[in-house]
Structures are given as structure tokens and as C-alpha cells.
Length: 127
Image 1 (tube, rainbow, N blue to C red):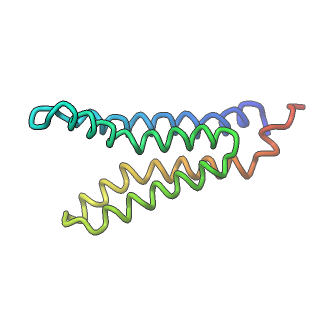
Image 2 (image 1 turned 30 degrees about the vertical axis):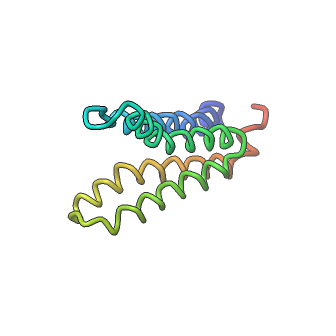
């Protein structure tokens, strides 16, 4: 395993995970204080940041133990799909939402899985 391949395999899921967390942080920006009180707006803002916080803690753990990243991001994708399927919207919109939100979660989970399976090669000294 070349050094470039090892570095790419190690860093890609972590960088994509940071981008995915940033994507979730964008949802907190949809909170508007126009129709709510100040404290209700703050509460809604915090409520929208909870998934990003959970994923951030998971990333910190997955940095060392890749299997945690595999489980966390797989669970994130599954929970989102289970939450979207019963919604009364068109199938095309459901598929769009699933591919946009759950798709990257499964991609990151797969990359953490590959990281975990190649753990011995990634942390060995280059020859």
C-alpha cells in the first residue's frame, strides 16, 4: 500500500465527515426570529444543531476507532430514511431527500469501514 493511498484512505472519510457536519449546521440557519420570541428562536437554533453536535462527538470517537464512524453514519442514514418514508410527499421528492442527506452518510460510513478493515496497513510504517 503506497503512502499516498494510505493518506487518502485515512483522511478522506474524516474530511467528508467535517463537510457533512457543516451541511447539518446549515439547517440551523433556517431558524428565523420573526414570528418567535428571542428565547424560542435560541431554543430552535440549538434544536437544529443537535444532529451536528452528535455527529461531531461521533467524529471525535471515529478518529481513533473507525468502527464507531461506520456505525454512526450508517445509523444516521437509516434514521433519516425511516423518518422520510412515511411523509406525505411525492416519491421523487423523497428520493431526492434520501440521496441528498442519507447518501453522503452511507458514503462516509463505507469509507470509515474501509478505514477500519485496512487499519493494520494504515498504521504500519512505510517500507
